[in-house]
Image 1 (cartoon, helix red, strand yellow):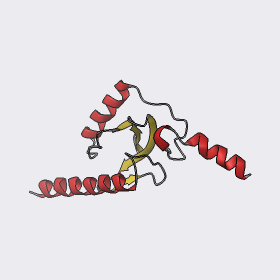
Image 2 (cartoon, one colour):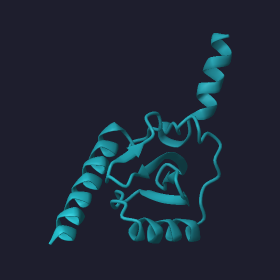
Image 3 (tube, one colour):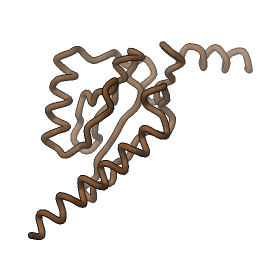
Image 4 (cartoon, rainbow, N blue to C red):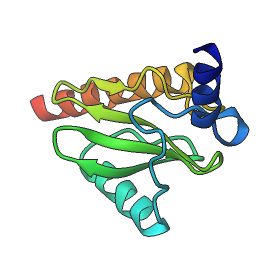
Length: 123
């Protein structure tokens, strides 16, 4: 059993040691058109901008976006923005560009953007 677990772990790890969320292992990379559409949809729906090497892709209402790392060439995780401005990210996808620190910063930026929006709306 340990050998099988090690083989499964190796199969789920991709370029540069990137490890996609367990729900996204084997997910096909987005086309450039899907990346462009994801960026536009994220801007329209109030998602915070992602760092340079990451892209929002494949929006699904009620579920949010998948996140693709274009540098590591893997669909690495997901992000969902709630009506309260709280951004939820996967807890297991990881690469040099999508990691606990980058997710925390993204969550903080979503909260800041929501507070700005709420303050402006009250004026």
